[in-house]
Figure 1 (tube, rainbow, N blue to C red):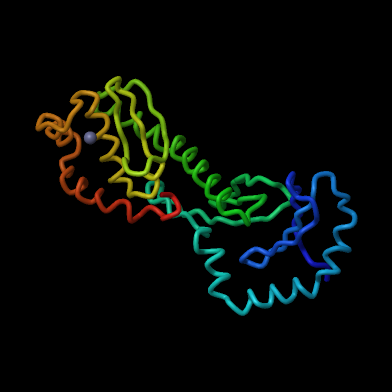
Figure 2 (figure 1 turned 120 degrees about the vertical axis):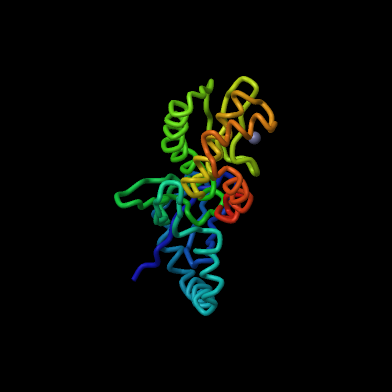
Length: 235
Ligand SMILES: [Zn+2]
């Protein structure tokens, strides 16, 4: 059976080189404009070296697992939406990674999926787009319900804050809210909406929060542990 591999063109490469990832995938790095028709012959010549490295990797299954489930998540538990997404990694010859959504909450990353940095960047972008689509309508609904209006809303992925509200009533939501329960998300949205009236954490502010969410003290406490719900690779 011919050895499966992906090809990457590199501006800096002067020669052809072979690389095997920690999960045993073979990548052939070639200089720009290299004649790809000669690649199968080059790979065939190196077959015994490839076999040796891949065998070694197979003998160390823990190393292999780390490659796949260590940073590379196989699923995303989006508690805020009550959804579990399966994540699949599909290597192609592309130099980039692009997400693609399939039915029944399947997210596929296609491209240079051996590169964790590229996968991580794409997963984060995808989560921001999901948060925009799902959380902004919730904020809008709560704004109607409470009668508290805001000037604008954006979604990002800051390290610490779940949400913030500017002096000009612009609300910023953290995409990591997707990993929290709907109750906690609701509390954060109400909290930020109340800042459009009280730009501080005064007694008046908390009393306004309490009007809309009587259990705010418990929720505030629970939110402190919320970061445990967020996967490490999101940090
Ligand atoms: Zn606050």
